[in-house]
Amino acid sequence: MKSIFYKEFIKLNRILLTVFIINTAVLIYTFFRVRLGIMMNEPSGIWLDIILKNGIFYSKVETAFYISALLLGVMQFYPEFERKRFRLACHLPINEYKMIFYTSFFGFVVITGIWIYNTLGVILLAAQFFPVDIYKEIPLIIFYWFINSLIIYSFASSITLEASWNVKLRLVLLMAGSIGAFKMAVYNSNPLYAFTAFVFAVIYFFAIYFPALRFRKGL
Amino acid sequence: MNSNNVVISVANLEHSYGSTKVLNGLNFTIEKGKIFGLFGKNGAGKTTTINILMGFLTPEKGECIIYGEKAASLSNENKRRIGLLHEGHISYDFMTLEQTEKFYKDFFPNWESKTFAYFMEKLGLPKNRKIKHMSCGQRSQVALAVLMAQGAETLILDDFSMGLDAGYRRLFLDHLNQFVKDNNKTILITSHIVQDLERFVDEAVIINKGHVLLSAPLSNIKDGIYGYKLPLNIDIEKFRNHKDILDISITKEHYEIITKLAMEEGCNLFKGVIKKEQIIPYTLSFEDAFIALTGKY
Image (cartoon, rainbow over all chains, first blue to last red; front, top):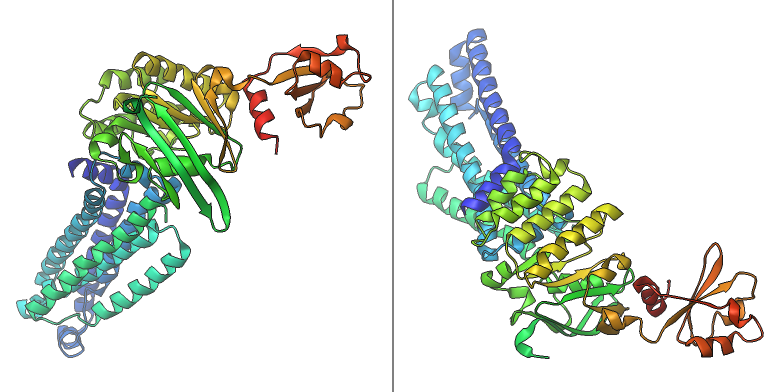
């Protein structure tokens, strides 16, 4: 696993930096936007937006999270697809299933890192302006974004690695449907529900095996 | 043939792309320590055969066995024994030379750092140079260095000459000769530039449209075919479709005829058209023999 992670880190170090910059920039932007909003408006108006209209003052973080997952999935597997470089990994003296697992697990670890970073960032930011009642749900909400990001990453990886345009198109449709279904689950605070959603998202990770093994067998 | 010595065995291989059959029952075996050339024109089925051998294509029929295991499902131990050079010298070009060695070293316990260092020294590039910033020739040297340093017993080299100029092709073969012959390695090599391999391979299989045209030690490939130079002022067209004429090429000064006829029979064929003294025999190259067998188109 160490060697596969080493390769993935070298391949993605610039992408990881880009992802870090994107998410940090969005957190900073959100901080100043809320600060400015409070300075310019009555705080009670902002609270009403949050409480009555379910307005999420850190919604840009969701977009940044999804863009990061998409970028990661594409940029991790495009170099493998390009010039059929994935063949090099297939001939490494390591079980192919393990190799695919470790490669995609690297993506999982990075997305988990982004989730933790964004959750802590938004909580710290919110704690500057709001009482705990306003931001206590933040970890759960971002947890669902994390789940969606895992699905986006899984499909982005699969679609990038898949050689057939016909199959790529089917995967795109499946991704759109899956994300739509998981979006509906957002804000359900039942821990069992959240855990079930997470288990399903992890199952989606195995989508990467489909094009990887097709690639391996030349189908 | 001693079956214990067989490293690669290809039996009754058949494959099609859509309705186009590219392999029609291909058979050959490669023994330990042999340098084996797989030759054919574009579209002959070389790459398909290599892809099946590398386990990246499932054949419709037949099987490829390497070290007693199916090519598509090699054990880790056998993967270590086989070095693959992919067409176009593909590598992890986002890595530097140093990172490349560090990465591969973990997978190959018998990694030969000295060998890798030897190639890197010859290359004369800093260790922190990324492979993507190298020329095609330099990349070929890196790919070869990785194969040699991993200590593979058998090398499968798919179109090693792709994108290389004459100098780098010669250098690649020099290095192969140096490391392979000393260490009794087995090699399966393909190239579309057949003349490069004349001084390198022991045995050759020439395939065309998925069939084996000829399988023989390289020294025997030219047996039974002869080359003659004829002056340009004769009417060559009437010989073009003769059953014993395998190829006619036009050079600046002569027609070069490749035929199955030895000198005396050749003289009889051209009797009345040309004097015997004007028929100049010449030594055929491997490429001449290859063209004679497969045709130009």
